[in-house]
Length: 192
Image (cartoon, rainbow, N blue to C red; front, side):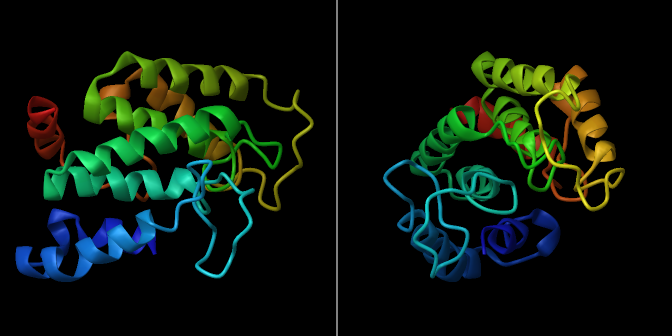
């Protein structure tokens, strides 16, 4: 759901402001209220297990929705929640499942790059760099070999994309997902 709401808030989606306010915003708030005490989010509405911290499940997927909501609705609560998601990712986001962007450490690292772009807080750039450092030791952590080891979302291609984005964080974007306007981000930076 978080990814769908994220996409609906994109300027290119052309969703009128009333629909965003009346339908999308309450849906986002519903997702926010599903948060576990740890700060993580469930992988589905019916799942009460607080264990997955992947871009495709949990805080690393929800963080992008929250950052976009902060930009669209101009409410501090969304940015605050995004920052709390980043703390969950920092504590639990080095994954043994793999290095990729979907359910691996590189994908979790993109959360920090995105939050850095939005806030310009160097703490998030530092965290992204530490996750990149971990990824540079590819193969040394006992991670499983993905089904598609060279693919963008599960394999080396996504990890390499993340590592190259860490070098120029101002232009970094989660591949095939983040569509954000840098103009909108610059305006939000001034507001916060």
